[in-house]
Length: 455
Image 1 (cartoon, rainbow, N blue to C red):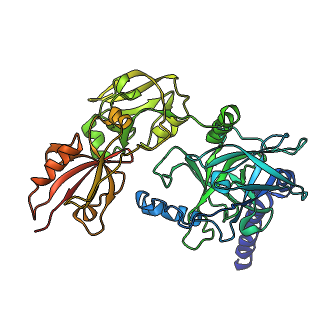
Image 2 (tube, rainbow, N blue to C red):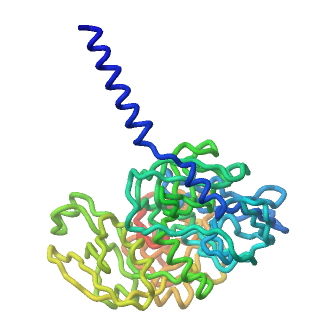
């Protein structure tokens, strides 16, 4: 009886082994042979390096994602760097990451057959971390973009690139998640990243993430790491973004993104009940910029956008992902919940501003430890009030309150701040040894804090 039981267990094990290793796992051999000729190695040279490269504003990024940007700090001491890319046309167009070629004076592209070409930058888009290059050649192999809507969590994917300068290395895994919302080092959040457990390391940046049909489903861009190497959490720019970026870079050399002019937050269970939602979903409008497309369309703070341009908004981060891909000037329909009732409105999407607000010349620190200035005319038209923080003195009341350069102070205690004059008058009346509220705008978010002048 025992022998029969053991024989059954052995047979069951063999049967599972045949399923798992004979039929369940794909063979990547043919895929690698077919795709590798279209993958390129990119080497760059930067002639003059800044002695003090600007520090990335990692404090503005959620802590869990700060390690994503550590591997991008600065350039190697000799001014050389390398990455990956891939051909998207037979006449020499190449897609890669912007950070691979950022600041490069020379760009050399090497193919699998050892041919080398000098490449020119056609255009780049910092918000998606993509750059379009061109080499002078024809009859080249090229990869195709996959259909974005066909991507599923759990499907097999393969990366080809040059990690740690190891040419044409392949690594495989599965799609771990879709639509990951990760802010950039400047606070932008317009890319719904594809997360995978494929081993991606420095040097893989800009290379393709392929499905089993050999189609590109993403452009490898970032890794989460505490050691500098892969720990199985990597992020790729999805083809839905790449297709739009490539089209615009080819046609006009830059990328225009859709813009609503709203500041949003998530909807939790309690907020959903208070707002008349049956379940937590959508993007809660926390603030609307004056004169923005949302303002003109009649969107108000407290509205919850649940659908726009035919796409459902489940998480608040879905809204910038969707709107960013809508062409400026397009008229779209949005469904929103206001006071428990569904409303449908039309919105003409605007163009996302491309530059940060410009501040004017400053003077000297005040009693809070701040140097402030008036906003420029363009910013006034958007905010109509406030003062801009130009500098925060270390170990000052403002520093302890968490204020940062670039913050826009709009309220101090219970008083609105419309000008530097109102700000200076307001700080003179602040009590000592007692905290008072301060409201500010930081990278599209309204934030309350408290500040205290010690005795």
